[in-house]
Every structure is written in structure tokens, then in C-alpha cells.
Image 1: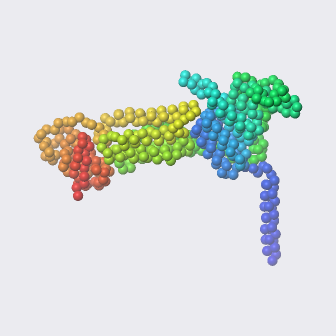
Image 2: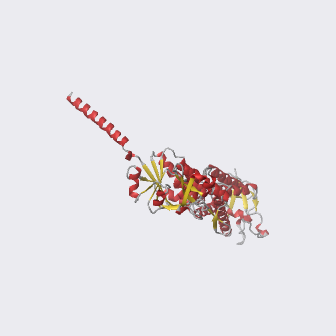
Amino acid sequence: MRNLAVLFIAFFCCISGATAFAQVIKRNPAVKTGVLIPLHEDINPLSGALLKQKFQQAIDSGADVIVLDIHSPGGFTYVTFELMDMVLDAKEVETVAFIEKDAISGAALLSLACDRIIMLPTARIGDAGEIVMGEDGRFRYTEAKSRSVLAQKVRDTAEARGRPVALAEKMVDKDLVVYSATNRNTGEVRYLSNKDLESLENRDEWETGNPVREAGKEMFFTANGKRAVELGFADEVINSRDQLAKKLGVREPMEVMERTWTDTLVFLLNTDVAAFLLITIGLITLVFELSAPGLSFGGLTSLLCFSLFFWSRFLGGTSGWLEVLLFGMGLIFIAVEFFVIPGFGFAGIGGIILLLVSLIMASSRGLFPETPEEINGFGIDVLTVIGAFLCFLVALFFLSRYIGDLPGLSRLTLKPGIGVSSSAGNTLLGGQPDEQTSPWQLVNVGDTGTTCSPLRPSGKIQVGDLIVDVVTEGDFIDADSKVCVINRQGAKITVRRIS
């Protein structure tokens, strides 16, 4: 009984201690979990897709605070808009933009969308004017339509986060002038632009002072951390990264979602150079595989190249199953043209078109770009794919001089006819061919031979003393089988198994 009492008391103490500990944790705000996601590069479709993945992983992990460690010069406007919407829609977590150095252009807009902006005193934020490269290669201010959409997006975001709307709009509109204005009746102080003042119905009630130093005419609003806090644009200033977790009230150390080796590989494979090489090598090895069907080195290499291409595009956010389906249909069309339908017609041309379209779609975000950035990016993607095809054709041209020695590929080339002496007759067993005569020229319909290798459906047979490249009607024929020549079109010799 005494032992039972001791056990009961120990059990009760454990339960009480656990309950007390849970209450302490519940009362202590420092038990919040925080995740830090670095953004230390320009904003492009690939970096944007990777950031979205990391952001969703942080949400799925149950983090209370997501910190975007931003040091970026900005980038694509439409990608920036997608990232802003991602942050604005994340209602279940607190989002924080931590700026240790620079958040310029699109990076400043992404920071604007976060719940809090924390900066180092010398860090900079702003200068988000939208520019585009002209036909002369020079960067210039975008057209008014694009600027209007950008300005409205910035105004709405600043209003949603309770930040000075005029200063936010000044980041993207250099023609504005922002003043500190005071209402004579209520004493309210606001930052108003010249356009805001012109549109006010009670304009006489507002007294304006000198323009804000960082928001004068012909300049985009840019401020360091200390000044941004003074203007109400940023929330807090800290002196070092070490103070960040304490300021946010999260456990230390915070989990950092660094880029993994998979992310790095995806990033490298999504570059134009890598895409060019994967497509070119994949096409060349594909021709070798089609010349001698049956999974070989060419087929494995081609499968590896195109698998890496589409895998990297999947993770990069530019490809889906539709592109893979179109690519597979293109391969089927080409295979049908290669083995079933004689000549080169609809199936072959259609297959090539499907391959081109699928590769271009997988490299870009659609076939109908709208913004100047999307048009430029789409043009680069098209040039990369077309360039890879041209390089493939050039490589095929140089291989053509050796193509007759490759199993099954000799039928793709036309060789000049060489006369055969009448003494040769129709039999191959009684005479020796001339040194300049190709073996296929001495084969006639009705000749019989033995397969030297499996025909799948192409391979080699022996007719007398000759070794000849042949192709079946589509059936598989084992080695050491008796076959008969049933058709000959140029260098293409078709055989059938002798039952």
C-alpha cells in the first residue's frame, strides 16, 4: 500500500508539473516559432517559384512568424505581384520583412506587403520605378498604362498594411511630390502628394509644409532604416541580426530555410545554357535510339536529358503535365513516321511541331505574354529552344557522313547507285562483290539469310558472305532466325521471318 501511495503521489506531481509548464509556455510569448527564408537574389520566375515553395513549407510546419530575409535588387513585376499576393493572403501567420542591406524595386514592394518591416539603420528600401528595355537597348520608363496598374497595386497594399500611401506610391512614380500636411481643425498629420491635395474636397483645411526630402520631384522614394521608421514607412530598427529573434519574440535560434542542393540543381538546370544543352543532347541521342529501337545507351541518355529538363521545369513552376503529354505525343508521331509510314509527311512534321511547342511551353509561363518583361522572357525561351534544334540539325549533318555505319540509320541517306556487273547475276553465293559496291546493292527481293542480331525492328542479317542492315515489317525477330527479303527501296531492305 505504501508503494502504491508513493507511485500515486509521484504521478500526481508529474501531471501537476506538466500542467504548470504548459501554462508557463502559454503565458510566455517567447515560445512562438519563427522561420527565416532568405531572398538574396533578383526576383525572377525561378527564384519566385522557389520562394513560394519555401513559404508554403513554413506554413505547413506550423510556424507562427515567417521572416523574409530580403537583400535583392528586385526583378520581374508580374512575379513580384504574385509574391505580394502570397504574403497578403497569408492570414494565419505573421509576416516580417527583415532588411539588412537593400530592398530595392520589386523587393521593396514585397517588403511593403509584409505585416512588419524591420531594418538595420543603414539598410535601404525604395526606388521601385518600373523600367523596360527599348528596341535601342536602353532602359526607359514604362508606358502610362503599366505605371497606373503598378501605382494602384502599391496604394492598395500600403493601405492594407497601414503605411503612408503617398510615400508608397512615390516609390513607383517619380513625378509625385509628397508633403507633410496638417489638418487645421483636427491637428491630424498625414503625408499627401500633390495629386492627393488636388483631389481633396476640403483642401483649405490642410496646411502643407516643405516636401519630404526623400520624396521630391524627379526621384523615386528611397530611405534608410532610420529615416523609414521616422516616416512611419518601416516599423522598427535593430542594430544587428542577433536582435531579430528577441524583437519578434520567437524561439532562438530561428529555423533558416536555406537553399538545398536540390534547389541549386533546379536553379542551374533552369538556366538558358543548361536548357540548350539538355535539349540538344537529348535530340541527338534520341536519333540514335530511333535508329536501333530497344532501350540502349542513346535511349537512356535521351530519357535522362528530357527527364531533367521537365523535372526542373516542374519545380520551377513553368511546366505541367500538359507539356509532358504534348512532348510524348510528338515522340509517338515521329516514331510512327520513322517506322510505319514511308517517306516524311504529316506525322513527322506534326511530331516536330509538338516537340517544339511542348519545350517552349515548359520553358515559359505561357504562349501569350502580355507585359514587356513576359515578352522579353518568352523571346529568350523561344530562341533557346530553336537554337537547340538548329544545333541538333548541324550535328546531324556532320554525323551524316558516318551515318551509313550506324545500325539502321543508313536508310535515312540516299547513296549514289553503283553498277553491278552482269556476271554477278541474281545470286550472292557464287561471286564476290566489287570493293566499291555496298552490300545492300547486291541484295534482291527473294534472297534469304540469317539474322545476326535481334531485329527490333532493325538490325543485321547475313546473306551468303554479306552482312546487311535490314528492317522488319514491325515484328520482333530473334537472332539466328531465317528471314526472306520481301522489299527493297534504295538502302532500305525489309525482311520477313520464314516460318
